[in-house]
Image (cartoon, rainbow, N blue to C red; front, side, top):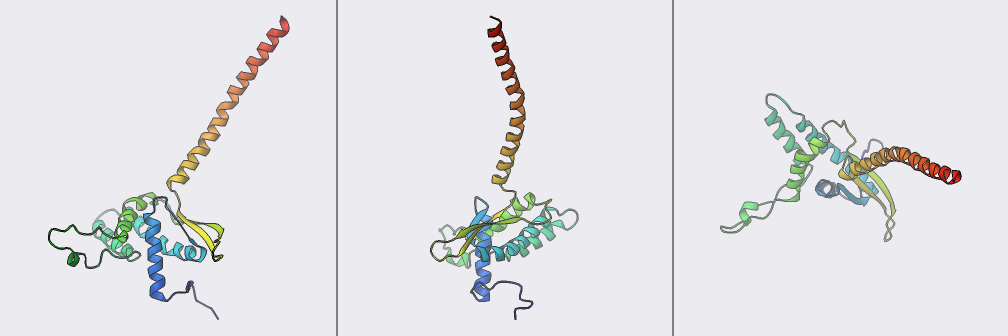
Length: 193
């Protein structure tokens, strides 16, 4: 029986599964479009994983008062466990005169999470991600899904377009009535002649 077994195993052992979720979380946070395409079970497992990290950054964005810097560092270190660490043995591989390799994507993800996403979701109590089903993959028939961060630039552009269309349709109605009035006046003028 499967009682009290909360999560999917995804055909992987524990270390591989956690590493895969960290990679997916890093890809989602670092993506330019704030979305990635993956299979539906992976997306469903990634959602609570990434939302816990975003909640930590949201808490850090709302810190105030005495000891807030230390608490912020603590929250940043807690969130770093959701991503892969920086370059392992970075100092050993760098020789004198060589430029060090760039920091890994996990470090960049933590920076973006606390610098940008914490402020974006400061007033949002939860629900930072959205899963959109895409259908089945042609090769193996796996269900694909898009997992994306909400309140991204595409969502804001769509809302602005809807507002523009809504206000634009109201503005067109008086113009249309003026056009019909002028055409009816010209028709009346032709009838009088």
